[in-house]
Structure formats: C-alpha cells, structure tokens
Length: 205
Image (cartoon, rainbow, N blue to C red; front, side, top):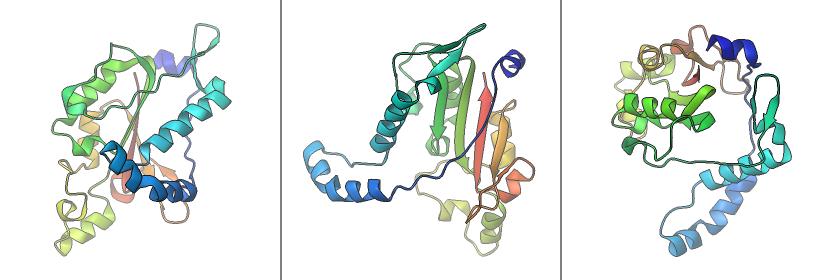
C-alpha cells in the first residue's frame, strides 16, 4: 500500500451525469424489452456501454503503472457480478479497479463478499465501494418518530451500516462522504458518519 501511494498519483473525483435522455429511451423500450427477453431493462447496461465508449475515447484511463512506464491496455474487460453471495468466477488478481456500488447492504454475508472483491483486485489496485449510511443525522431524527432505517430503506436491505460497521469491514480504507448533498456536494472525511447519507470507501490493495 505504501509503495502504491509513492508510485501512482491518487485522486478522487465525482461528476454528476444527466440521465434524462437515458431515461427517455429506457421508458420507451422497457415493456418491449421485458416481453422479448423476460427480464427488466435497468440503467446498468447504459452505464456499461458508457464506460466502454469512454475507455475507447480516452485509452489512457485503461492503463496500469509499470516500474517506469504507463502501460496502456489495448483491450477492455468489463465484468459485472450479479450474485456475489456465491463468489466470483474469476482468478485471483484480475482487475486494477473493482467498483461495487450500493451492493453490500443487500447481501447475506458482506464480509465474505469483500474478501472476494479483494481477492480479484491486483496488488496496488483500487477497491471502491459505496453503501448507504443508515445512521446519518436525518435517519437518527427519523428514529425518534419510529421511522427506522429498516422501515425507510429498500425492503431487500439486509444490513444497515454505521461508520463503525464500515470501519470493521475496511480497517485500512479511506472512508468519505458528502455534505451538503442537495445543490452542492462537498467531499468530507470528518464527521462522515453523522453528516453524509452515503459512505464512499476506497481501499488500495
């Protein structure tokens, strides 16, 4: 981890994306899609296509750092896991970047899943996750009137994380969040457990 920090520049940025046009297309074709394929059309295929197109346009983002060179890869492998409770059908140290957004709260055994994600991340690679902060200030106020996270969040959430739970799963990761989060989003690390509705977890392998 120390060598990775000394070798590669590390940065973290967030960009808001207007999904209006994507939503128009999805709403137009989703019924025909489900009738034809038997399952719902979500936003994920649009995101996957945007990632692939973006990497083709900006190939230096699809790279890893060698001893003295930036190694630009001439291939794109995008893997999307749909059932992390049963492990990943991938060899060890497969990816330079593993991104897992709003998933671990749905799983029976988040610790086993995190271990799998670490297994497939290459040494020096990044593991990035997000998960709801079930106990930020607004959720705590809701509890005073009986609106617990279990009642307010998605019915299929199996875990309701506080900062201490995230730290237990990721003892060496950077844990960040956002505040405020309505019109202006600013990245924060202090008081993230109280102020931010979302945890952003970045771990260097």
